[in-house]
Image: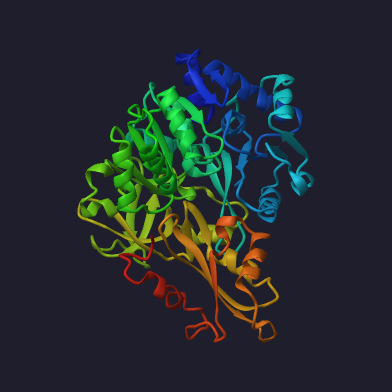
Length: 504
């Protein structure tokens, strides 16, 4: 049985004076990092936060984020990482839905401050809270089945869902990662993806277990990332494909010394082979690895290691084989395995599968069936166990590594007074993989509505990456099936002509 306290205990035991974190101008040894986590837990307890209660964080990457991510669950409380790209109504919903008692943030909380009992501001009140707190022992009375975090992801009903991940879920996936793509004690891991994302926090526990050093980048900038790689001898990193593409372009334009890099992993959305080729040319010392998963899987299911050797092979289009420790199957609608090469839904089983969605039993029941998580992704498996994604059964878009449920966008579109009918869907985008697009049928009295007006309206309600990049106005009703369901495939089809698959 392991909890978040165990990797920290091991690190303090075997490497107490080794640098654990480098964050801007600050650095902390494992002894110091452990002490700060205990003091943060003590500060929460002094505010009245008890075991099982929720603490939210809305902040850029930094040592305070790492301390919160590790220390809060290690003390038996529950971390709620909030997406910094979300609009205020989305953040307010997550705080209310989770029942968070405390918000730790590095920005003006605005109306969010009224939703929680306490706001702690980074760095000032955060540092004073730690300085004045009695350290609280980590791990005492905490079980591996206790909830460690609520990670909010888009909802098929328009409302975000809190993914319930236990200590067991997250630590199991850490072991799966370490068994498949080993991290070592000499590793220096650069966190370039935001820590509120599964891609950003994927390395945290693994680095602590193996006593590696983690270096944080507060907001992604390819030039700064390259400088950090050169300065600190970074050995590994993981980001979304757009980050790798930007780093490759920056390296080609103004090369740094980056031969310390041995692993560059990416996930969140499919990647163009040409991006991989340019990344390999820019960073020839690094092994490239694609990871695939979902927040509900803590987050990883498959990995394709050594992509740089497959650039001219069909297998470059695969998202890899099942990671050690979990099982991936391709099933038909009846839950039966399909033949190799035949398309079905990707279903994952293992100790990394979430406990369920917070206070949403019906939506939990819809995806957790027969002890497996039904991902909503359609794909096939070849004879050697490599998985290939071809489409999504969920009404979802993946743009720059962010999941966008079409219903979220449509709910906002329908709030605009000019909109009679609306449909949102994904279209190919060379930079982001997919972009959000919409078709709107206006009401007769608003026949001349400007699409830009509707787009501006959306920007007030939802995160920027969810806002349609374009809106087509049509005056005929949207195409529908016999039961009245909008036939989005007809709306999407012109955009996807000539594409190999229905995800980009």
